[in-house]
Length: 442
Ligand SMILES: Cc1ncc(COP(=O)(O)O)c(C=O)c1O
Image 1 (tube, protein in one colour):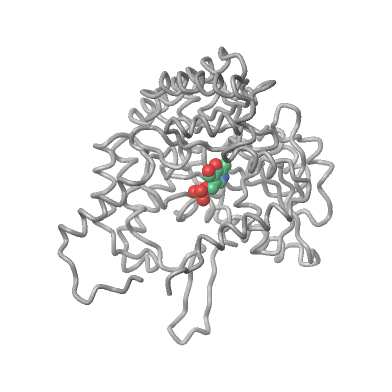
Image 2 (tube, rainbow, N blue to C red; image 1 turned 120 degrees about the vertical axis):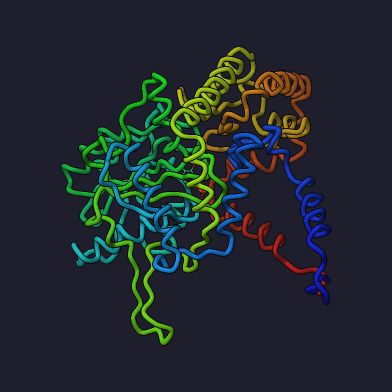
């Protein structure tokens, strides 16, 4: 059982210890992991570390005491507002996509409480591909998500969403793009719908916010999804994804302060003083804000364009390569930097995932439909050929031995995906996580 050391250790041995510990984690620098880390090279990483360290103890909870951090937050909002075609956009830095979404849902709820107080059980109309951060927000804040099945192209079905709007609806949500298959929902049509129904529309661009604008500049056909769509009220966009910032930074942007004001929380009775906070957390770490600001200053438009070109090149090569492997097929015909694919007849997708994992890849397994997810970044450009070779070998393994679908973790994923009673699945997963946090050594 660990106790705090009686006497402190020296810095050099602690840092050696940390390096040794981190060496046991997944090899994210080598591009063997998708979606968890967005790596723009060692030099950039060094800058993030130094910027973070400069503000490691600073606290944006008091923007007057840390005016330099507030200035950086303002500049991040202004630079991104311009990128999203709304020079007057306002907003705040949060700790990540989930916090941006939590804050947005709480603000939408509070806006409805003020403007339509007769709604006792507020609802948000969302496509089924929306990120689970919205389920979490709905759970925390007493909002019901009306989940509308996506169309056959896996994009939000606008007509079905229109039909799902009722008198309790307080807003609409869509993604640019959705995480599972990388498809951009029809934001233009949803914006029209939102205006017609006088509802606010949130666009979750957590994964897309800092890649779609560059892809558009590179000549890709990306339908408008940002503040150019008149009905868009707010946008979540993660700096710590394709913004290549350090972890712990996202933005929640609003078209106007009138829409944003509902996210500001004030408590006046605390003996410790009047307390005001624009986001979910109290103490606001300065490190991630400084690192995000430094990332944008260092990369600039040219740097982001170069990274986007590398990422889309790698995604295209993966898509082309996968399309040529008999036994697997792409899921969704996305053209951005997320690729999803599944096993065909006789090739169990989860057995394939196990075989890829055995070859050293960290695999993101999806369901409904069963598929494997790749969030492709600039850092994946060098590994495309190795990945495709391993995928070909994994397909051959599974074709040779279909019983692989009944060994390893494949049956568990297969069963969890197919189990009709979702409460049972939740119970099992809850049990697993509880195990993970249970102490065995007191
Ligand atoms: C579309 C989308 N929204 C929200 C999130 C949540 O972001 P975070 O993990 O930073 O909380 C993600 C993460 O992948 C995402 O892809």
